[in-house]
Amino acid sequence: MKRFAVICKMEFRMFARDFFGFFFALVFPVLMLLLFGGIYGNEPVSEGANVGMMDVCVPAYAVMVIGVTGLMSLPLTLANCKEKKIYKRFDATPVGKKSIILAQVLVNVSVAMMGILVLLVAGKILYHIQIRGTLISVGVAVVLSVTTMFSMGFLFTAIGQDLKSASFLCYLFYFVMLFLSGATIPDMLFPDTMKTIAKFLPMTHAVDFMQGVFAGDGLRGYGMQMLVLGGLTVIFVGVGAVLYRGKDWA
Image 1 (tube, rainbow, N blue to C red):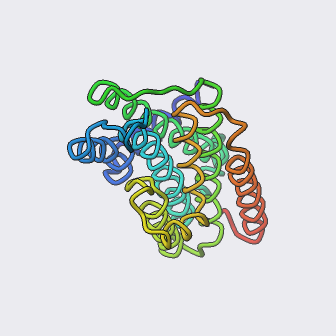
Image 2: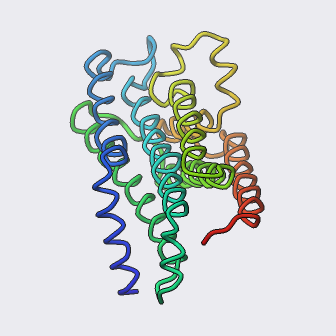
């Protein structure tokens, strides 16, 4: 465990040196909060509603943080290490590649949780957001969102033949989902055509689920979202594992 803790510490330092991952996981969501908070404040989303605009935006931005780490930071790190034969070198040591990969996953999940925590604190202090959901319901939504986004990123590294192709897939799907899922711009502002397209995006279901449980809705009302996110996680991991069998991890 002591050796693994040292590995995690090293991986966290490497993550902190990556401006893109650090900025978009911990800084950019807060900037989005300040931008839309400065425009809308935490006024009710509609006349007579008991949910404010920032009450809706914060859980959506939380999914954005998960997307940055799960669809961008971790898969590109895996693809880069594989392409540069870094895992092969670690396999020649007592550490092994499995410990390195596990540490990279743990660091990225931890950063995602840090980003969400920063968002919640900023939202509470600046706009007095309300979190009506129970710890269990919010926890389930976060876990399913994390597993779906991270497994999707894993699939992209399995499909991509090298770092460039994996980067193309990650960037393409991340930014498409970022702007069409409601993770940055509230989907209530979308025209019907965009809403229809958004229903086919995994991040849309994660955003809807997170917003619902943050507003105090029970898990029972989000069976479809849980089924979609859980099912996609199984599919992404299964297909990714099959594709990786034909690849040289060394």
